[in-house]
Length: 318
Image (cartoon, rainbow, N blue to C red):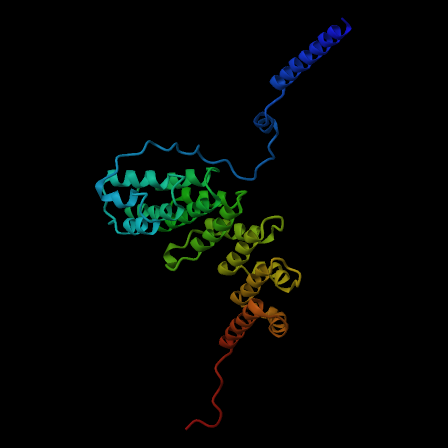
């Protein structure tokens, strides 16, 4: 009799334990819920000007794009098919290419080629698509970097204040690949081959400020600082020289490539005050750092020689 009572009590306790476990499992938040409930840290990325454009349904593929859309072909062959398209294309071809540009699971090299072709064709919605993909965090950093490059070339082809403003916003992005490319792209825009396409004074002022900010901000990834150093040199910003000299002179600069870029920038800025530092690096350093110092020193000496007045011929004139 006592054994039956013991069995009954144990059964009741076990049942209660199971019931409690069920209640706890129902009430306890799932891992996804916990992640959602955690407060996200503030982001430095400016709010996108609009929500990412929803990808429309796949359009009918024109016969002229059969080789481009044939996924069984090698990517390089599909890219060649894109390159082979003329610049004059009907709307249905442009619509199909735009769809392929926004296809996130497609090869990024192919998408990049498609972007180039759409720009050559003057596709009117390209800048809007690039902007949406730039701020779409579902895209890879590499593709968002491509978007910045395409926005730069779009601006160079057809200067639009809205496009360059988007590049300025990209210099504050959390993603280092985007920020690095944006800083350098703005420096490229400020120094066009055709001087008639140089931006106006206010835009140039903002571009210079963005380059200096990237150079001075030590809390960011070194690639952003490298872009700042290179951009300041390209823009001829002598006010950046104190910071660039410090990077070039600091033996413990990590990574070493940042120091190499700084040394090269001293040559590009023709900084005569750095002659002593560069001579020391030529004697004591090796590898790429030695080569960068030697080349920078040569540029400075060449510039200094060009400033000297021509020598006066000796002797009497006939």
